[in-house]
Length: 232
Image (tube, rainbow, N blue to C red; front, side, top):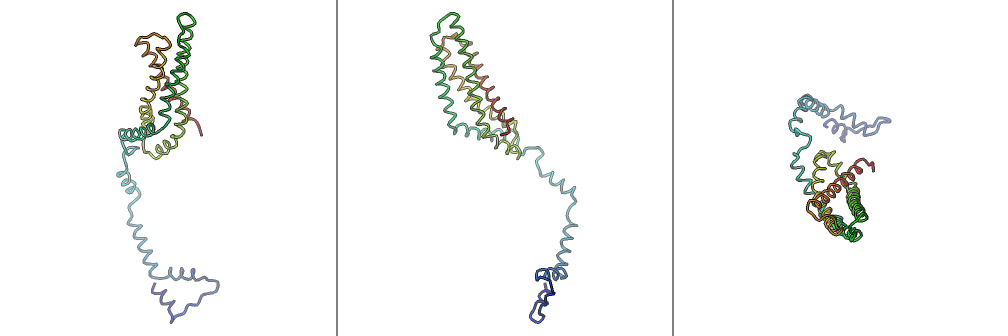
């Protein structure tokens, strides 16, 4: 710096060499100054005082989490379940599903009511059970597919960032959707089962009710599978 001030002072005017810009001239003068030499010496000292790469990697490994995810699976479950509860309760489709289950139960029950005994009545009741099974399977899959498409972008980003495990997210989502699935199957079966004239015994109704709940879960799993393997 002293040399630059001395050469650029009023008593020592600067004469620029031909084909040399002022910036390049300042760079060369600074490279020849004592300030530049002191700075390079300090940088070299810092370089030689830095720890070896092995020690630095060992230090970084000591402060990083020992597992892939920073939080245990219990904390992941609590976090995802709270978020899933808000999504389910704030979604208008949740309440529409309840209305649709009651509406379809009334429509199907009115169509298959007063069948009477005999072969025709038995065949019609068999068709009633197949219709309920097909309806609950398709409704659960049709509702799950668009919902999973919307949520999978966030799920993939969080999983890649190692916020939580994909397995924990799937199990939590399944458990949080279970009450609504059971309610939907219960309303659809209870609205029309006794109306159609099937065997009015608890074990028969529970068997039919359990089949519908199982198909509800199968439809949701099918919807999530199709959303996962789809590229768009």
